[in-house]
Length: 111
Image (cartoon, rainbow, N blue to C red):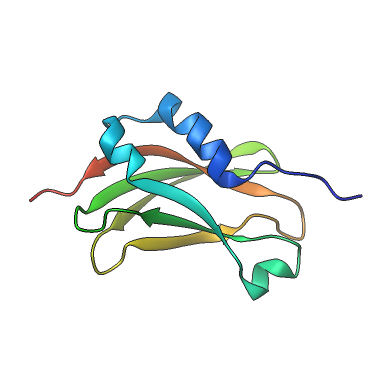
């Protein structure tokens, strides 16, 4: 039986304002995006990518991972700048089940 899962981007858009410690303009510049990926497609999933939509302004982003609808201890920091405006987080569906990420905070890189 296949389950219909909310996209990680939709979940992040809903939960990010609850967890965000940054102003709205910084948070709005960072998105969780689903990307087609051969490795993830094996399990009917998508690759979840954290993307800075305004790379001229670097961001420090902290994300939390949820696995099988339970928050994990994974609280990771990603620096998104001109050289690296995106970071791959992982597949939305693994062999054991689903996972997603939520944005905890977004701050601007200094200077």
